[in-house]
Length: 291
Image (tube, rainbow, N blue to C red; front, side, top):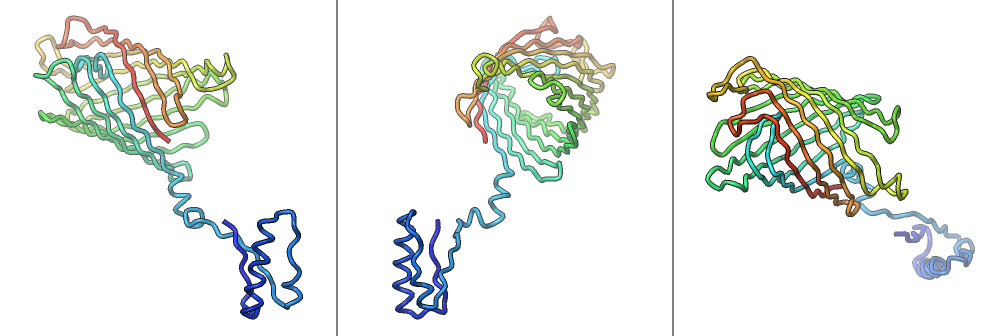
């Protein structure tokens, strides 16, 4: 919003005339400014008045925030190669803040609600907090996750991970490799996992726009500690190996909404109390909103 501010040295009556003259000059963009101010010995000073949102550092602070919320459905809940429950609804919320100087903070929530067996809902609510530091193409992640269950058995886990952005080297073929280590403070379980993911900008190649991608991801890991089980369901410490792969697609419905769906595969060589096979295939879909 722009307004004309009259110098305090002008006489009151003269200032009133000059105010309307200045207003007329603003409305008629092509008309030159009036010289009456100079004739009266008054100076007409032009300044721009911004909104409070633009003037105060609050604007910059708010622009550093990001927020994403989503709801998903998985035909099976599989965690590190092992089946946990059947078909489930998964709500999620994540908020992030770019601190600057390469640092960022994020806090999130993820829930699992079993919809296949009302007698065994296996409800799970996970809360995460991460601090990341990015230098060049590397991002280091220090994280914490609280796995909580209404029926009890809550656990707490620490994470240290490193990811590498290969977009400068590979362009549209960025495969985003990562490696991460996890330590469960409650179960003394240790996990090492590595993987990579790739989103092919298929609509960019076909139509010149970037509203759709084909998404692929793969991972392998090894878990050691009191979180693997023998055929009788007893915990054991010799650990187990797991691996997985997913393929699907994502469509940006609007600037703030996207829809994704795909197939997943997982394998582990640990006994799985939920079935006779440790190899499984399932599907999932999600709708997310964010800015």
